[in-house]
Image 1 (cartoon, rainbow, N blue to C red):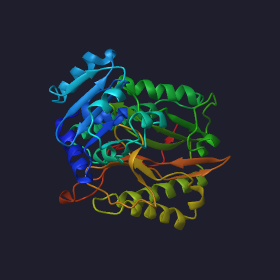
Image 2 (image 1 turned 60 degrees about the vertical axis):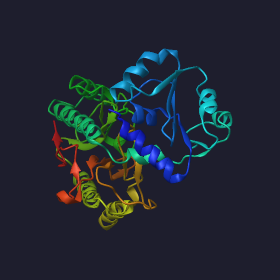
Image 3 (image 1 turned 45 degrees about the horizontal axis):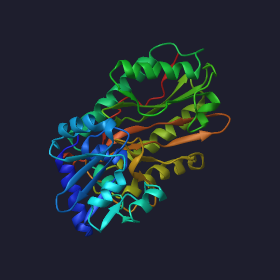
Image 4 (image 1 turned 90 degrees about the vertical axis):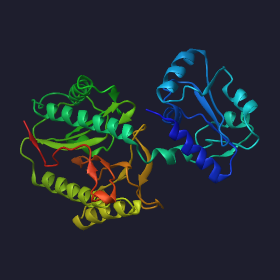
Length: 357
């Protein structure tokens, strides 16, 4: 999925910053730039065009195959156990590194390089067509799996059993794995934002919060729906409606050129007007791609503006300890303003409060 244009864009950022070379060691960033999926590798990139890929003997053939698949067959591959040592020996004096991601020992061995900043993460914010195709597939699998799960009986089954059922449905539909450990929380447990499924049985009257996603070609889907087993109580209807309205308010501001903080403000204002802001105790959303949580993160302090082809989540919630909680979350694409600018919800599934038998 990687291609040479990503390296070219990174080299352009190095030139703009006045750096001679960059050492990339984070495996997610390495996969984005080269397509490499192994567990040990690094990249030395100079602004004058030199590219050296470093890995150990276990990944000699895999690295060659994966780099060639991205059109990087001419990149020099150096097989060594001393990735840092070789990089330092080959690099110009002005070497920068991902100091926000490496340990102190590695920083010392690299000669105490200056921070590169989040240059690769900056590139990853805007998705290309291959990335969007993987994200669309991951989201479609996720939605189809949940729809299948909700069509069957749930009452009496345990949280853990239902979570495993959803897991296998995603795999059967073509996911390579889960995007993250499924959060499946019933009754009072639904008030816990990141609850781990237990052997608690699902009972009539429970709110059931399901936060889940499939992974395809390394790209993650992230979706949450909250349903109720049997007819909902008035308080359940109320908080579900408030969360749904808050999500709609936040989604409306996920448009190219709009400050990231505006979406946060809109969703929170909706919850405040409904009288539930104090019960919203988590973040509102985040970028999603090769990582389940990546730039940009939606918050009041974010200084930037949204760019077209950015993929984020929008996930307001209300959590009432000891009673229950509701979260509604979608994976969303910020679209080109020349085509209307409406955000595209990739996890396209009803947000009605479903009554499940």
